[in-house]
Structure formats: C-alpha cells, structure tokens
Length: 261
Image 1: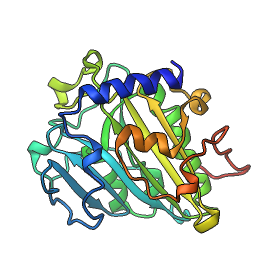
Image 2 (image 1 turned 30 degrees about the horizontal axis):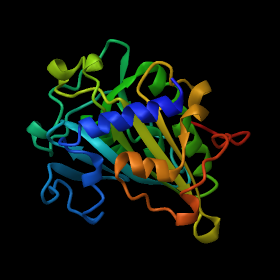
Image 3 (image 1 turned 45 degrees about the horizontal axis):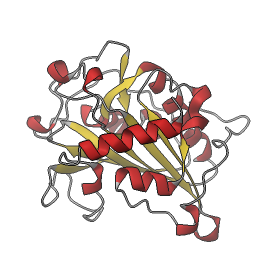
Image 4 (image 1 turned 90 degrees about the horizontal axis):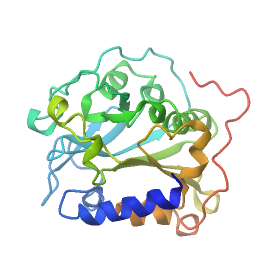
C-alpha cells in the first residue's frame, strides 16, 4: 500500500474513532508527571521507567506513546528472556496476559531493550507488557527494526530524542487478541528521531502500517514530515519549526562499521 493511501485510510479511521482516547490527550500535561499518575480528564497514565517513558491508555489496555533519550552506547547487557505484567500498574489498565500473541504477530516493543542495555533494570522494564503491542512479525523484524538500528548507530554520533506511538485506527478484522490479551491490534505506528540543536537540529519521521508489507526494503515509503505526524496524531513534536516541513528523500543511512549489538 502506498503511503498516501495509508495516510488517507488512517485519517478516516481517526475521524471514526474521535470519541475514543487518542494520543492527542498526552502532550497537554507536563512531561514530569509522577509515575502511575493519571492525566486530568483522561484515562492515560504516564509510566516513568528507567531510561524511558511510556503513556498507557487504561481503556485500551495498551501503550499509546513513548519517549526516551538515546545516548552513547556504553553497555551490552543481555536482553530479558521473559515478558511480564508490570506489578506496579493497576491490572485493569494492562493486558491480561504476557503470553505470545501468535497468528504471525510478535510481542513488539515500543522502546527496544537494545537501547537500554546499560541497565538490567531498564531491560527488564522494557519487557513489561505496558511497553508491548501486537506487531506484524514482518514489520517488527523489518521496517520497525531498521528504525531501531538507525537509532542504535546514530546515538554514538549524537544524543537523540526518540518519540513515537500508536495509531489505533478502526479496523476490527485484525483484532485477534482482544479475548486472549484484552488489547486491539493497532493499524499503524509512528516514530520521530531528533538529533542536534539550534540551527543544526535534524529530524526524521515515519508512519508505517502494522502489516507484513512493512519490511526493511519498504521503510522509505513510510517517510513523512513532522507536520504530517502532528496532523495525524494531534501531538506537538518538540522540534524547531524549520525542521517540521521537510521530508527526507530517504531514511538515514546506517554508518559503515556500526555496532548494532
């Protein structure tokens, strides 16, 4: 599916879902809310883990947004082997199971463990189901993984701010896991990477469908401007105005010799 068709479809879905909680509710409060605190007038909880933050929609039982700073790689601790329910978050705000989804969907991380490999605590927390959603296996191991590799490589050049989230859409045909896990399957995911500051600030953004076609080869098809992300999600992305209007011709190239471990 071409990006224009994806965006058109998602825009229609967002209008249809206007009465449901969306990520547009998230940026209005301050970023420093206490872990577990609810935003006024909404059903979103900000969860401040070690090294990253996710916003959890209790009504949907899933995360809707994430944010973290990716700094120079200083660790190589092993990824946690098990997924868990966060014991400090109310159960009625979380998925009801940490078991594998199946049906060609992975337990997909919003914030990957590999960017937190300086801390066993952070790695363990990244495997909480508050940071996990059903992701098509090809996407999770394809286009989404490539964006993670871009962060892994470029964080050794510049400190990066990474912001992203979920576009739920309105497609019930792939909601395979409502009964088993209590969560719907998002239609798409978005991610923004920001590097530099002042006149040297650069940003890149993608909106990618949660589908098998979202492979590494197709990543450039999902490039969008920051303006487009803000229009689709209602988010205010913290990037200079001059950097909001441009869409790169291609995704950032992985530097030669980059250690992606």
